[in-house]
Length: 253
Ligand SMILES: Nc1ncnc2c1ncn2[C@@H]1O[C@H](COP(=O)(O)OP(=O)(O)OP(=O)(O)O)[C@@H](O)[C@H]1O
Image 1 (tube, rainbow, N blue to C red):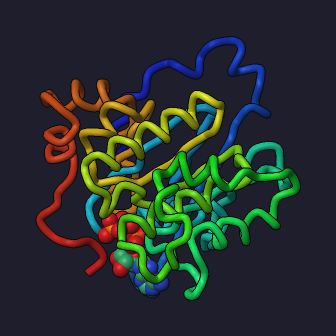
Image 2: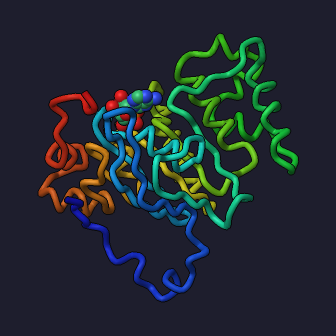
Image 3: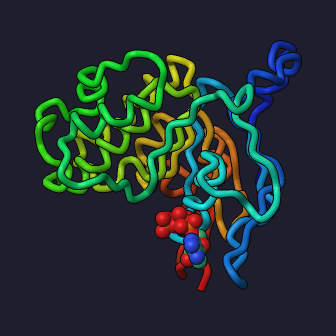
């Protein structure tokens, strides 16, 4: 059963009368890999400027759901609508970003600018993700965390309206984790809708507008970080998470 603790944030007359302002509308998503049901009738709506954090145990279906939301994969059933339609740009950071070897960081980002119409300043993107000092380094010489930052830079090329980030903080040092969540907050302030998955519940608690807890392919709780903490009678999101899900076993076995 979904523990629905979301506030009445959508009940203002403005938002009710403005359905076109939804950034992502995902309805009735279900998916199975063979016998393993990974998502079971999941529905999610994200507004422009909203930060939604997807948290859940390993194997709970976060990556699969983010692939559906960014439209890099299609679910067995259900629909995903992004913004005003086909022309709404989505930036996607996969869980394991990969880049073609032999090219520098700057060349790699420059390559992706050809897919967007307007002139993109690579320097600004490199600055934003903290890779200015590594602009001339070849992608195969990057550390795991730097590769993820380059993936974030790629996702941000062309200022997409919707950004989907799969574990963007994974492998980053503590300073870069903070910077990453600052970038996410800046994007939201600019009106970008951000959906991310993360196991870093401290920064999630401080940054997300809404937290969705996925367990066994279903949403078991959704609400602001504060609402989830209070509903679980916990002191912080980490403790609330422990109370709301079972992490004894990796799911899907
Ligand atoms: N291509 C695939 N083929 C078969 N099973 C898959 C495939 N991709 C994912 N799964 C299974 O689907 C389930 C959900 O996986 P998913 O990667 O979406 O979880 P997750 O919540 O992102 O996990 P983690 O936190 O470990 O990254 C797991 O049981 C996984 O083994």
